[in-house]
Amino acid sequence: MRKALSAAFRVAVLTTVVSAVAASCGSDSKSSSADTGTIPAKAKAKAQLFPDDFQGVCNGATQSKAAAYSQAAGTHKVVYFQTYKDSLLEQSSQLPGDWTITFDANSNAYGAVDVVACAVRTSDAFVKECDGYEKDDKPTNNKVRVHTAKYHLTVREATTGKELGQTDLSGDNADCPMLQSFDGNNDTVDSYASPTKEEVVAFLKPFVQP
Image (cartoon, rainbow, N blue to C red; front, side, top):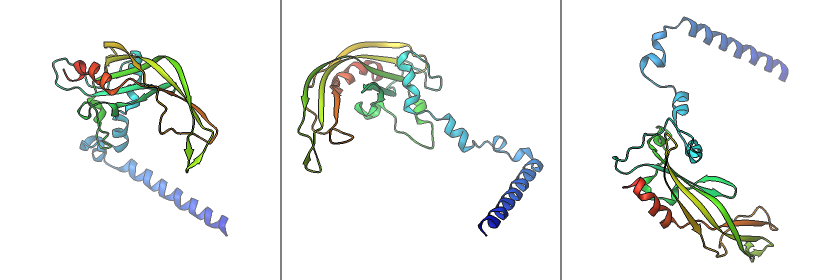
């Protein structure tokens, strides 16, 4: 019984597909979305930029869909990356809100970005090991290895990858983190101190909000 129903369903689907193809072939091309001025949803999605699309700029790559940088402009829009563990992660939330973009599914909001900032960790130094972490108010064997670190911060034009400025900053906070994510109850993870928000903002300000 189930196989018979399945075969009938396949016939119905095939009939529907054939009818749809025939209707498409006989339709007037003027009725297509391209001629009416509308943009298909898939085309809109392909045109959108996302934060990760700017990561290559940290290495001097170009992002042709970004906005052109002009020193004569007012406040610029920036995407900020910083080394997290062993790779770059977007950390734009560390910057002033009027410097950054809020994602909008209905528009290419990130097309307004013209500046990319990248804080790459260049070295680190182990300071101490922290323990005493609990899960559900119960002790665990989890530990955190705390490191201070140094970062090379660059700021670049989004469209060309051209470097506008650079500096070196340090992350010197060696305090044990109060909150830390672990996969289990016997994990040891590494934590690297970051440069302060104030230092990053102070360096970027002449390029983002002159």
